[in-house]
Image (cartoon, rainbow, N blue to C red; front, side, top):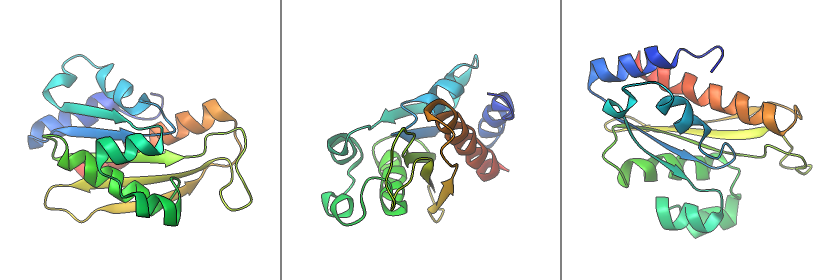
Amino acid sequence: MAGVDVPDLLAQARYWGLRIATAESCTGGMVAAALTDVAGSSEVFERGFVTYSNAAKVELLGVSPETLSAWGAVSEQVAREMAEGALRHSAADLAVSITGIAGPGGSEFKPEGRVCFGLAGKGRETRVETVEFGALGRAKVRKAATEHALGLLIAALR
């Protein structure tokens, strides 16, 4: 991806002996695809979860139905549970999650372009954040969210 040095990210993970998992909603596997576009990524990339529906978030990652009901899928609370669930349901050491509204659409309370991220690691405190990319259009929001998630992984490895 432009702006993100994915080979460096993978080299850093390899150097530290860390495996990576992804838990994606609005990006539909774009982070996993970016990682696996690089030859040799199988040494580092453990697995990816594409949990587009709420049911998938619950069944595959163990996201609490109560959290989904209270906060909605596009929330830092759900992003946290997605990242932590990806760690629990894999052999990865580091997991990034993405849940958001790529568009078109959204609401007054959850506008198009709002994306929540989670970053969980074994022995680390889980970090969450929300980025307002704005109504850039579906493709640009998804690309921006993918690059941001890759950036979170790079930062966690340095």
